[in-house]
Image (cartoon, rainbow, N blue to C red; front, side):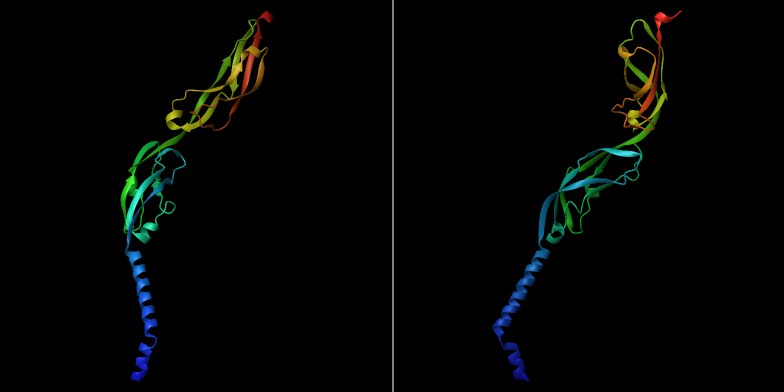
Length: 224
């Protein structure tokens, strides 16, 4: 029995010793990699989430930050821009605001990964609240009627329009103007469709973009 055990242990001893040495070497390499520390820099995108329907993000600065990380190699290697974006939650924002956030507070990394630096440190978010207003419609004229003609009346139907825009801008609008009406070419009373002028402050018209223009022209020579 002892002889068989001795043969089992020492038969092909060199081959067995080499296999054991190789196994130890592989284990040492793997253990070294797992325990090694590394550092890397990458650009992380900034995103906004849970934006209410009545507001819009009009400025986000910056749209990405540069981050330097240090930690166990396998954890640092797992961090990527796609899997670790900075997410700014706007769920509780309901009105126009200029907001500032510390980028580091919204950067999520695995335990054991240290944020060495982040630039820039602050994220600025500017949101605008949407608003609607009903405003009077005014006719914009250019040119002149012939001297023998007189503009007896001018009106549009409907004479009011509802506009939508950013609250800070819409509140400063007093009226909606029509497209220009050239009086040089008008020879008699008329009725026609006329578009409303959309300025940069007006994002859209809620109900209609046109009105009915009604001009009553009087010929001075036919007056009794």
